[in-house]
Length: 368
Figure 1 (cartoon, one colour):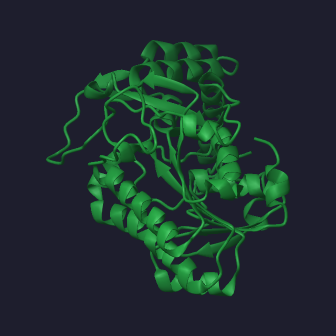
Figure 2: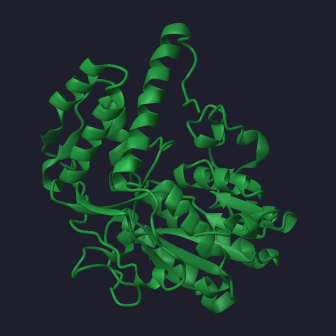
């Protein structure tokens, strides 16, 4: 995964969902490569917890921020007619976890499915076609795993859950816009990504668990999810792969699996999360580290309050197709990735506590 700096230097880039976890990391990496970065998002408030807003990096000051909604075809068309982009990265999503999607199914489908249609329709009607359009998809489009691993063009797409189905529909429509209208779309079906500056601490396993641990809480796992299996990949590795795939003309019109660096049960993942949290805390406070280990995590029953939450038991991706086109080798192990995450959530928890003590009116965003 070399040469991305040369490819993107001087290129004008649009990232939808640019203030989110993946979008913001893409923005930072593209700035490092010397690209001109435009980040579009519904919420671009300076107080929003986002890597783009974090002090120390100066990302916000170096990008073009567009406050907008990817589902608004008129707004997207006006932007794309006014400004010609070399590459577009679609990272806009609503409810990136199944619980939130069940709570807000309409908004989930509107953004995850119709947002893709609006974006691609805007590209088509603007008359300005970029060199590449990246669409962020998920391994959940395959549905429950029946076999050793999901494989493109072999495993049927059987997503049922609200979030899963919304992303599946987007996959199909993205391929349609390539086949029918010739738009240069590349689809990446990603596993679970971990890394610092993921502020989805309400739902996502790693940020929710680590932020809770450093507030003195024992994280919780649902009883029926203990033996669920997922793949995990560190965000920096994912970003490099996204950049390389999107720039390759041979990848246009194709869907690829992005497998992880580790395949673990939820129980195994949580045990490593607790260990990483204690390891990071130890140099600062040995007693706190001992408390983290002693608390461990709790297993609880979970009722969906009348909703059918469809949580896949096993997910695993075959990587043969992606390895045939790029040098796919994750650089960061799951353990190292978790350590980086733990360092980040430990730091922002301490910063938040200090700011609440010294300046109660100031919200901590996460110092560099």
